[in-house]
Length: 77
Image 1 (cartoon, rainbow, N blue to C red):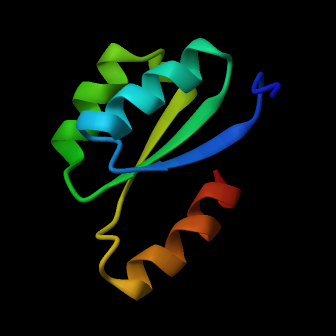
Image 2 (image 1 turned 90 degrees about the vertical axis):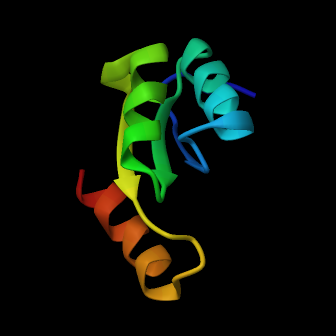
Image 3 (image 1 turned 135 degrees about the horizontal axis):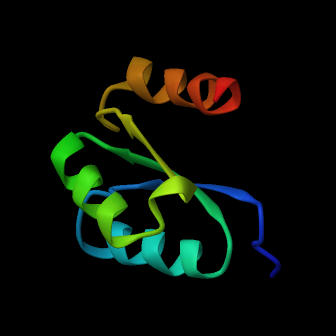
């Protein structure tokens, strides 16, 4: 799969598997929209990844309204 220049959304990007997935995707040329409830964790992930290719979006995935608002934010950016 060619990922160069694609925008991929990763939930839970502030730690654990989400952080690792974000890092792997950036290494393959993807731009990552990081979604997590913990802004500080996403900042740490951004510092480990190629920061210009990641954008954090704070959202609680158990809150439907917050989740539904994320796509419009990503498209706008």
